[in-house]
Each structure stands twice: as C-alpha cells, then as structure tokens.
Length: 129
Picture 1 (cartoon, rainbow, N blue to C red):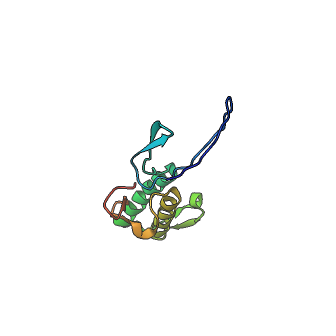
Picture 2 (picture 1 turned 60 degrees about the vertical axis):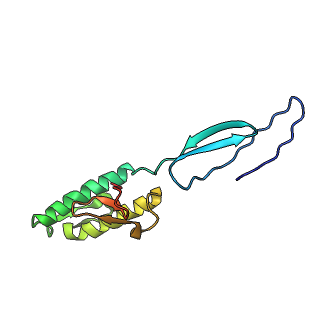
Picture 3 (picture 1 turned 180 degrees about the vertical axis):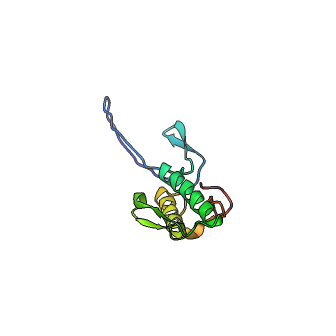
C-alpha cells in the first residue's frame, strides 16, 4: 500500500497524486483519509494493426491451403518487398507476437499460439485476435 503524509495549515491546499499499477483486470477500491473511490482495470485490447495483421494472416493461410502459397505478392506495407505467401506466414506471426507484446497482451511468444485460420490465442485458450 502506498502512503504519503501531507500537513496543511488553514486555507492551504496541495495536490497529491499516486500511481497505481494493477496486475489483473478487476475493480480496485481506493481510500484516502476516509474518502473512497474505485477504478476498473481492463485487459489490454488488440490494436488496429494487430487486427489487420490477423486478417492478412488469414488470407496468406487461405492461399497456402489452396495451392497458391508459392505465388509472389507485394508486402512493401510491412517492409518485406515481394515475397511468397509461404515466406510471409512466419513473418506475420512474428510481427503479431511483437505487437501483442508491445501492447501488454502477452509477455512472450510462449504465451500464445495460432490456429489453422490465423486466430491468435493465449495459451489458456482465450482469443487474442
């Protein structure tokens, strides 16, 4: 618990702030000298970039399943140039993992897995994107 003592004279005021770093999504109760309040911490949400990469991965996997995985396509938006769908698949998965780590959704690559359609899951089975 964080504590701070502030002594004020009559008519004085002072701004006091505390930083709370929640470790799990839930509602936290706060009390300051008899005044109470609460805040709710939520799970980090996927960014639009992560959502877009998931859709691109779905399309890449579709091409691989339908025999066109060796077709070259332009992936300059990701900085990869013109490469095959087979080459793109692991790059997209690595980029998705890096984005999920940046967002705080996972801590490492071992915290997630992908299904055959490109959905990304926490190791406990919860859908990430």
